[in-house]
Image 1 (tube, rainbow, N blue to C red):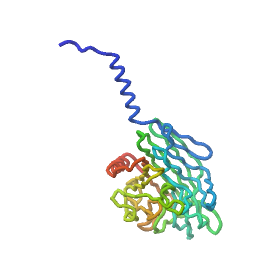
Image 2: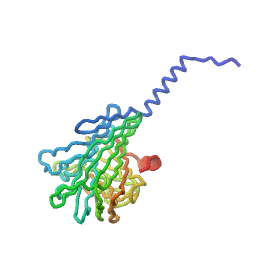
Image 3: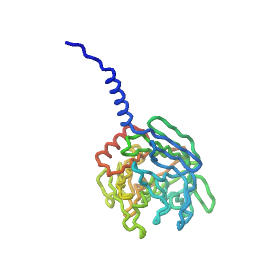
Image 4: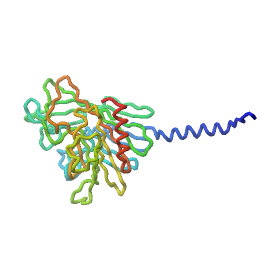
Length: 326
C-alpha cells in the first residue's frame, strides 16, 4: 500500500472552512448599550429590544397620565419589524412588555398598579443594578418600584428586579429571557385578589390594533394546547404565540411560561379584540406576597419573521424548562 500523501494546503483550507461554518452556525455576537434613557440589546448590527429607563412621553392626543418608565419596547423581529406596541389609541396604558398587578389590597386599601387613570398605584424604573456581556449572551438587571397611592399619599410597596438576558442565535429568530423577582418594602403583605387579568403582559404591534384609523388591524393567537384566540382565554398554557402581518411581512412573538412559575402552567388572559395577553395566576384565586418572601417568575420570548411551527415551539419550551431554574 502506498503511503497517503498529506496535502497541507487542503488541510489548511478545510480548517478555515470549519471555523467559518462554526462562526456562521452560532450567529453574530450579542452586545449591550446603555445610556441615560435606555438599555439596548443587539445581535451584530440588528437590534433585539430596547428597555426604557426614562419616562416615555405620550404622543399628541394621548393623556400624559399614561406615561411610564420601566418596560421593554420596541421588540424587533430579525427583519427589523416592531413586534410590540406602545401608546395605542384603544389602551394607551399598555406598554410593550410590562409587569403590573391590577386588583390588589394593601393595608386594607385597593391598589391598582396597572391602570394609571385610577390614580391609586404605578410602576416605575428605579436604577440599573448591573450589566453583563459574554460571547454568547448579554444581560442587564434593573430595579422597579411598585408604588401605592393611598388617600393621595405615595408609598412604595414592592421592589422588583428584572434580569433580561438575550441569547445568541443564528439570526432566524431572536431569543431573550425576562426574570422578575418581587419583594415587599415593608412588613405588610400584598394581597392579589382573584381577578381576570394582571401580571406579566405583552402588547403586540400597533399594526395589529383594530381601530377606525387602522380598520384592518388584526392578529392571531395560538397556545401550546392548540387553542386559538377566543377558546384560549383563561386557559392554562405553557406558551402563547401572537402573530400577524407587519408592513406586509409575517411576524410573531411567542412567550414561553417556565414550569417553575407559581401555579404553572399559568392561566393566560387573551383579549378577544386587542393584540394583548397576560399570564395571570390570580384568575385561579387570590394569593399573597408575604414579608420575607420573593415572588419570582421567568419567561422566554421568541421573535420570528415567520409563523413558527407548534412542534418547534414545544421543543423550545422543553429546552427552556430543562436548562434554566426560575
